[in-house]
Length: 162
Image 1: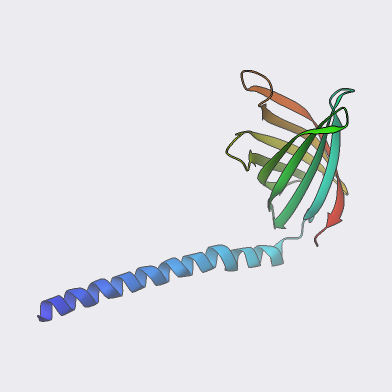
Image 2 (image 1 turned 135 degrees about the vertical axis):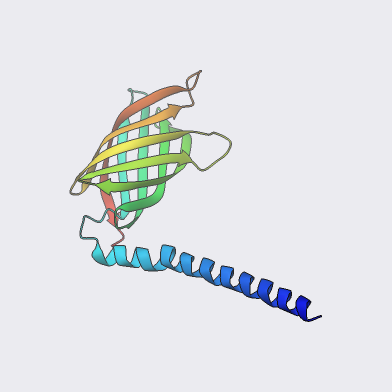
């Protein structure tokens, strides 16, 4: 009977120790490190709303909205693309974005939110005070064969969350 008690106590203390170590690692990863980064980061803050437009042709225009939340160099948010044909809404694509700011450039990785149309893209944007200017490269779902599309992406800050 004493051996079962010893085994049970050992297993129980091992599970509690593992749970405490896991909790501690989550605290370090999700609270302590981000808090330190917020205090130590002295770079530009891109948090907020950004908007832009790209005229593909006389008939087709794309309207963009980007919302960013920033923690030091890391950014996350949403990117919405509205396709207008003859001034009428044809399609909306909603994406999540993740990326980072490094030496005056913002690099973003974009993926669609919906599983109905899987697309993704990347943007490399130069930070120019209240503007972001660069290129957006993406998987073009409209063309047959899943071709690569690319266009200039110029965004202007419309609202700051700072």
